[in-house]
Structure formats: C-alpha cells, structure tokens
Image 1 (spheres, one colour):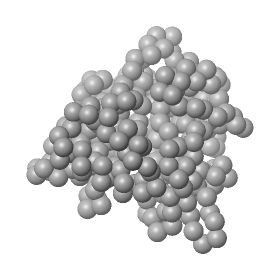
Image 2 (cartoon, helix red, strand yellow):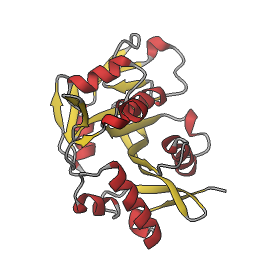
Image 3 (cartoon, one colour):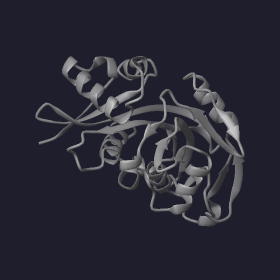
Image 4 (cartoon, helix red, strand yellow):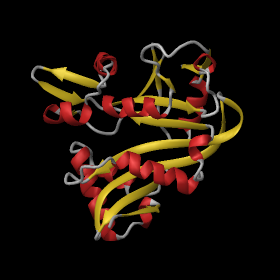
Length: 247
C-alpha cells in the first residue's frame, strides 16, 4: 500500500535522497550537480511530498505555500507554488494530482477547493500548462478566449514574489519567462506521450516562444520556463464576472 510523506528536502533519509536524485537526473539529464543538489536542500524553502510504496519512491512533487495579498483579492489568501513533479518510470498514475490534492488538504484544509487560491508555477511542458489551466480557470497567459471580465496587471506581483527566490523574470509580448538551470533536453521520443497538449493552441504557443524547439527531426525542451499564474474562486459562478488576467 502506498503512502504520502511531506518533508523538507534536506530532511529526507539518505535512501530517499538517492532515489529523488535519480528521478531528477531522469527528468533533467543535462543538469549539473549543483542544480541537483539544490533540489535536495531547503535553499528555496519548498516542501517535498513523496509517494512511496514498500520503501520505493514512486513519485515526488515540490510545493511551497504562502499567504499573501495579490491583485485578485483585497485580503491575504493562499498562494501555492508548484515546483517539479517527478515520477518513477514504472508508475503509471498522475503524481502531481495525487500529491497536489493531498498537500492542499493537509496544508490549506479539507475544503481547500472552496477557498480563493492563487497558483504559481514555472512550466516548460505544454501538457503541464494544459492541466494548470483546468485547475485555475483564470490564468495568465490566456491562450484563447475565456469570456469577458476585468483585466488586471500582475507584473509587479510576479516580480515581488519571484525576486525573493532569486528568479530573474523576462517580460515579453505580455508574457513572462525565465531561463532554467539546465541545457536543452532532447524529448523527441517522449513528445507525444509526455509533453504534447491536447489543445493545439497551447503546443503552438510553446513552440512559437521557443520553450519547445523543433530542430530538424529532433524536439527539445529548450531551457526556458513560462511563468504561469492562476486564480481560483469557487464562489464566482458567472463566467462574465471572471477575471481576465494579463501581464
């Protein structure tokens, strides 16, 4: 039977650290040792949630929770940072959904889905961004039309939030990016199964902005991260009252 465990990365056992390290290398084969070691420390104050069975780490997800004032509401509300989500090649389930729901219930409360929540993530995979937009209906960047509503600027909020983590942001064409700490990764063999979104507009966006790069007959995760920001408000039932988020 599997279990979920939340710890700071530097509090993992040696066996757990070795298994998480192997998962990091699996996902980021071009990353240097400094990058891998930073994910096994508490440098960025993230929590790590392990999905384990019989001592084997099937998956690991990084999360951070703050309570901050944001452009979306006049009081401080939970802000969840979604970091890397990693899984063992033999595990077929969804690590991010399973660990994410568990982490939210544990740290925000069992009724977290009924609360106002802001989600932030640095994303380099179209499929991951597609899942993010389903969880946070109001999101930036908006790819496609999501009805009317009030447009608000979140640039200063992103600058302030990510500056504390030492992340250098680049604002371009109403979108926000950052350069990641690894060289381009050849994802050709995994493109359709693990990277490609069902929504073709999302794939085109990632390719146009060179987050995903096609070069000859090869496809690369091109060391650029999209800053995704979403706002969830379960009590806002009218689509016309939803907030259209812009940089």
